Length: 114
Image (cartoon, rainbow, N blue to C red; front, top):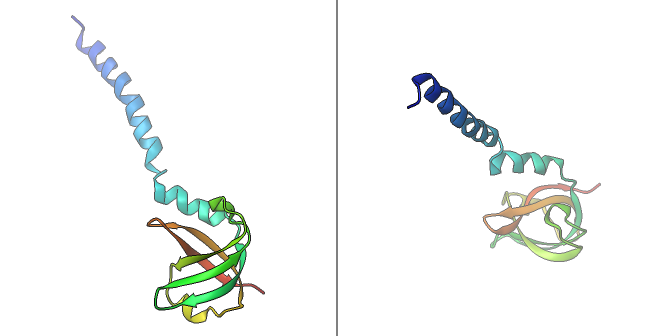
C-alpha cells in the first residue's frame, strides 16, 4: 500500500503534464492564432471586374493569394463589410486580403491601390 505522500506526489506528477498541456493550448485557439496570421499576411493585388451589391459579392481578377495557396485567377468573393461594395467600382485597382469565412472565400480587408 502506498503512503499518502506517495499518492500526493503521483497525483501531482500525473496532473502537472495535463495542466501544462491545457494551459499551453489555451492561448492558441483558432481565433487567436488565425487573427495574428492575418496581420502578418501581405495584401494581394487585384482589379474589380464586377460588383453585385444585391448578392453581397465582388468579382476580382487577382494575383496569387499566398495565405490561401491560390494562383492568379479571376473569382467571386463575399465581402466582410457590405458597405465596401458601395465604394468598389469596375476597373478599380485594389489591395486585399481574402480568407475562408464560414466556408466561403471572403474579402476580409481591402484598400484602394495607389
